[in-house]
Length: 258
Image (cartoon, rainbow, N blue to C red):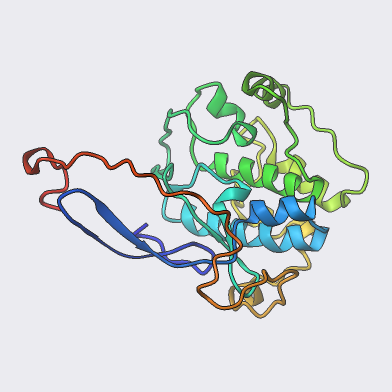
């Protein structure tokens, strides 16, 4: 997080620690989760989905330029700002993966797992582009392309790779999703010679001026209802846990000299 600073990321502002905890100070993004707004809307319009997807694509391009892979994209991990733009959060699974290297940890959300993660073949930056394809489909269709009541059923559908597209989906969105949800890494958009440009310059994104997006001058298709910057009513109320971890003895504290 200390390496990252981007307009579409919930950025880290600082950190400190005491005898018990490490504290990470983050930006406050009070407009609620994309997940909440998507469930209320059931599904987004093509333009709304494109607006959010373009921002996530820009984030991945930036992160991958620093060899950082997020590995946990989903609507719950995208927050909406007061002006209607979005910010990626939850870097708990993020990892630095240098070029040519892979990692093998099974992590992520079942509906969003890439085939190479399930098959334990080792994975890297391409997993983020797979999850972008899942996100675009879910925003437009109202549900992910691979659904089942049981995780094992989801995994079987992911590996089978059969996607049923709703008839109302834009053909260019469908084409981009197909290019992202490719099990063969040598053919998956984002992992080819042109890198992220294959995605950013796709026909579906042709109406998005990325320089205007970065400047936040494109009108957002939706703005959350907020009284002020401190209004957190767009988030669900969650009771705070009374459980407290035991204090860490100084000798056993890995951050004692941090």
